[in-house]
Length: 225
Image (cartoon, rainbow, N blue to C red):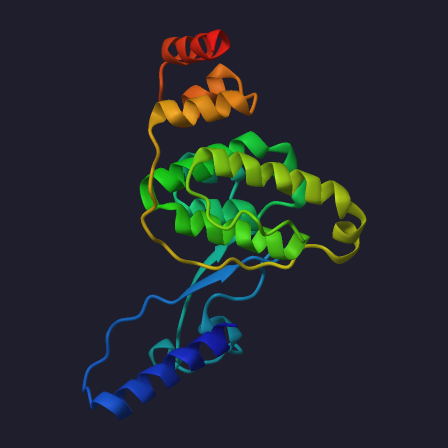
């Protein structure tokens, strides 16, 4: 991989010079993102591939890339970061059964992504889930916590329906990327919808930011209606 990435970089520079005639090159920061199941054990430096030699080091070509192995990042750390990249890595590093078991945690993480970066990226994540697990496509855009709850519920159903298929074939990795600001509903509207979904007060507080007192008042008012 070190040899391959070095070749990619040199070919890019060569083509860039051919097209633009630039005399100097922009410094690179090569990054490799690995989402496989096994541990990454390939050398990250080109110099590691050479036999030991008496040739002075300054004459031996060297190149290194920065490795990000998704399966080496603890899920608890991803939940703390709470952004689009951590959400993508969380899903990529989870089996269907783990996503099912940690449904509330995933909803909470993706809710933060919706608030900070918009619904488009979250919709791309679930679109990948729908394709790999044959989930109904009727939910096309995730614009609120209500939609997140609905889609994760569909995910649970799909896991149960295709459990044997999942065990035999596994999950195809990969997530479409895209960021676009979405339309955020009010805190009370989200809270009311989560109440309808049967979520408890502490979870609604974490998702919406409303106080427990406000949530209890909303729940009480809904009962009166």
